[in-house]
Image (cartoon, one colour):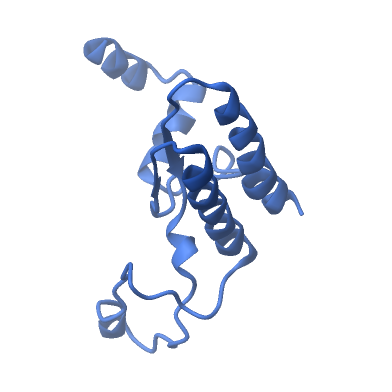
Length: 130
């Protein structure tokens, strides 16, 4: 239920905000999981390279997370046609997520974890770019 609150209900709240804005534009951070899960079973590492993700193919199985992300994309598609606002959904691979600060596993989650801890090298790198 928490996944659906985070992705679907909040998407509807974003639509309510968009209704109040003048000339809104939306970039929706979706997920690679919106493509669904391949029905193929990967037997060895060579098969992984054959499982390419394609915009033209939606797989027939979805995790609850993937289904909620795809639903949010459909909400934005639907309302953009009614409210006339440009939008794009970016289906990114695992970037950050719930609990990522406790067990960081991706580049961005590891970097954000260091930021939260106020790591000196990361703080110094940020000052260089600011």
